[in-house]
Length: 240
Image (cartoon, rainbow, N blue to C red; front, side, top):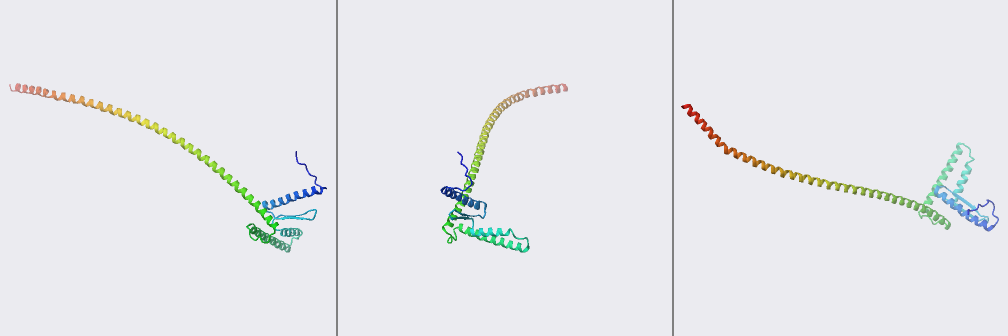
């Protein structure tokens, strides 16, 4: 069931009016703090309850906020003249100086310095500001850590995939090396067989050549003796 809308008019019941005032007052002050921190704005909120009780919030100093408000409202009616321009810039310079002083003071207080002049309420406000700032810093730190972890996880997956690819390549090269060794062994076996056959054929040829040479040497003396007899017969025939 949805939340019903409240009519924007005075609440007659005093108890309901007080509860609504307390809730909306806290919400307004919380939004003012967030606006001052997130947007670096100078914010001042003043609230008076129906009983006359004061509730206020200022990002720097309520006095400086009120003075700046008065200066800004007074500058809207200035005439455009050299004297008015000088006065305007003098006021702006004074405002900037006050802002610088407030920022320096606020910075020192956030660093834990010069806290002696602050009341319990001021210290509570300072603590709330520091808690909000610390929460933002922690959120940013956690976000950066998560992003770094995700990036490392992604790089780890890439390295793992590269290792798998390299392992596959090594196995493929190992298989090719084994196949090449087998082919080399087969070629060396064929060469050994060819050398054995060549040696056998060479020995056979040497044996055949040796037998023919011996046969020629044995037949050569017979040929020389016949030739000598033929020459001798021709010589005797010529003498007769």
